[in-house]
Image (cartoon, rainbow, N blue to C red):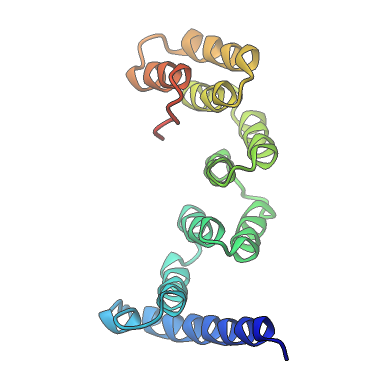
Length: 179
């Protein structure tokens, strides 16, 4: 066994044990310092994520939040499994897609983000808030024509929305939208 193989096996074991222990504690409703104090970072994260998965229950937004930490924390496979489970549901909502798209955008995966944002606009084509936010992401990625199309639609629906104006203005200055 190579050194890297041994490290991978140890990390996988720590991860699995952390999930099991974290899940058991979360079922009791206990988030306590013994989940993380003095533990290596990977083990502490695994323990807390195991608890978080249990605490998230069946809530899609809550599970997306858990998936976000996995995905952005270098455990894309685990995060993607959560996203796939949520998006395969017949009850998947535009609000689920926007949250997942934001994660992909944060991860620097514009093609995946754009696909999620397209789903948002398929489900809610007239939502002025999401039009301005998605337009801002397009603007930040250099597609000003598409961005301004979405901005115009947003402002046509609500021309007095402070937060939409800030999303749009920020995108021209390189500022990522605040949800």
